[in-house]
Length: 269
Ligand code: ADP
Image 1: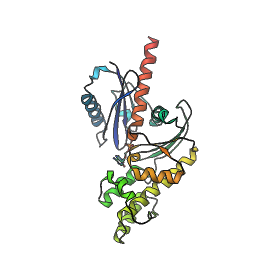
Image 2: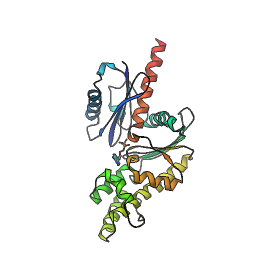
Image 3: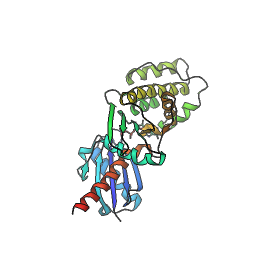
Image 4: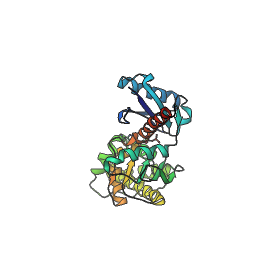
């Protein structure tokens, strides 16, 4: 059996995806990037293969992507996360009738990507200058509110009042604002919903820069947060396509490209 791997070494998390001869996903693995990108990336790959009982020798081709891709010398090739995300979303999006706009929120940046019918990138915009509007903002907020990241979605829907307005446009100031709101007796639920709407508004502004075309695919780790999904849908005024594994779309894109590069190479032999 032949396998093909994609490894997405993100600023916050490492994601690995493995596909088979047919390009079907066999398994995924997610772990924290930490500070030792290379060591953790090797471990992530090893863990996924062990979990699936796949021998390293059966992985015929491997493509690295993401922030730390250049550090992963074991890969046969590397591509930008924008190209990999586009390929992955195009492939996963087929089951939903095709997607043309991708909104990706990562740990430290956010992106809007427009793709054509073949999954090629036609336009993109990126915010990597400011942590507000990224997963980092959610991580900091969860810490300030003393709740787990995974709980943000539930809190969002349990508020008795309207979402609060978060005025700060900078994560550091937002931290003080959150603490101030708590000190004034506001509920965590309304604060969290306010944070989600604040991220959603920024994200929509970014997406409008590339143009929003149907269908819109939402991925990256923060797409696991149902409260953020709902806020983004409200702000966009349309339904989003959110895949089952939103955090691993980019790694999947790299894996399917690994498969096609391998097959193209074989044809040339
Ligand atoms: P990157 O590729 O930049 O490392 P990811 O797409 O992996 O980023 O997203 C990382 C972010 O995803 C984290 O900062 C966190 O905010 C968010 N995240 C991860 N897991 C969850 C979860 N289970 N629920 C909500 N948010 C999550």
